[in-house]
View 1 (cartoon, rainbow, N blue to C red):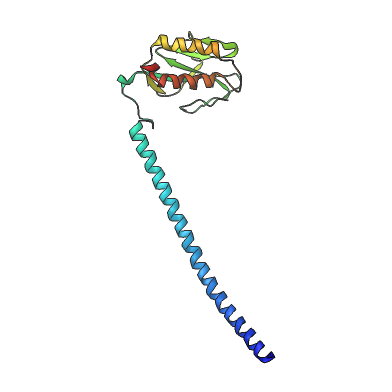
View 2: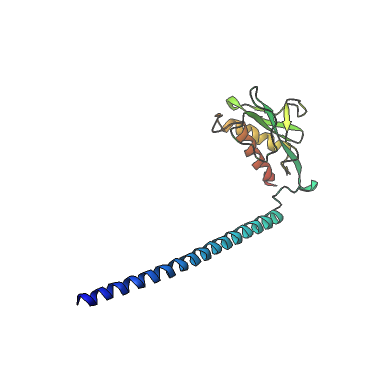
Length: 185
């Protein structure tokens, strides 16, 4: 019985060695196959994403193409440097809410801005050398000047200024969103 047990053990060891070598080669092939499938899936995903963005840009007119003049009056984003702010800003479509500048919108020749103590201004000269205007129109709107003035006054009455939670940059972003609605027209 002891002799038979030794042969069985040696046969099991031989089988294990053979399977281990085959298993390693199979695992290597499997690993490369999985890697290739992952790369193909990633490339398919990226291609689908690019196509989706391209379709959305052309159908919604949302990717930087200028609107025609009959779509409304253009409005522009502007910034004014604070005494300690750096110069050399880049073009942006949305003002970052915690920028060290003061933001405003120019629409129909008027400058709309909002600040501390619920104050709003609509009489600053748009040609002031202190204002840096972003290149190109942020958008176009069919709003009347009276609509925007009323909205700005109401914003000042119903909102409390807070340097982090509700500042001039957030006012500008909200006013731009309001202008995009064409004031219900």
